[in-house]
Image 1: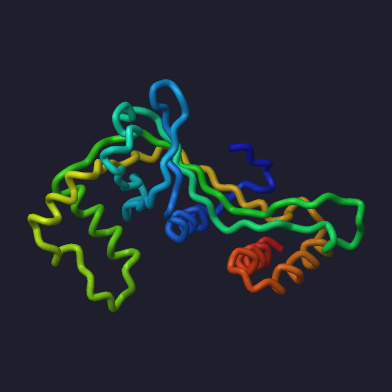
Image 2: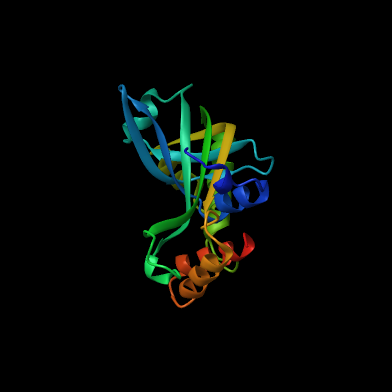
Length: 200
């Protein structure tokens, strides 16, 4: 990923927060010699060594992905930045965003490791008082459903984080942008404004 030095995320905890909070990722690999991508939820293990996920079995991406180096992209909040918000019109609009790229080697998982990854995924996204628990689902039914997926983990080799938050602009301009973003009700604008404050 192209990352000018002033946009590079140096804080590892921020990188892990983005992976945790924006877990619906895009996994890229090569399939039959061409780039191929799938949009799926991914979970990082507690030791921050692996990303866990699963493909639908009819998805052809898994068929030649074994031992490939793959890329998973986590898209954080993002929004348009208007030049009309600046103190001068000698400027152009831009886009502020946070993103994390994770590179690693692909491995298949099955049996108990797959069951644990599925259970962890459900526990993450179900509300705390949810009546749904994966370990309470009929075992035969669950076994049949898992035949329709291919579990995997990605051994993390490298992580890159980018926070493009107007760091290349003056303090005055950044404050003006934050002021305008906070007028929006949309979550992305509110979050970008909050992250920008952290970088002031």
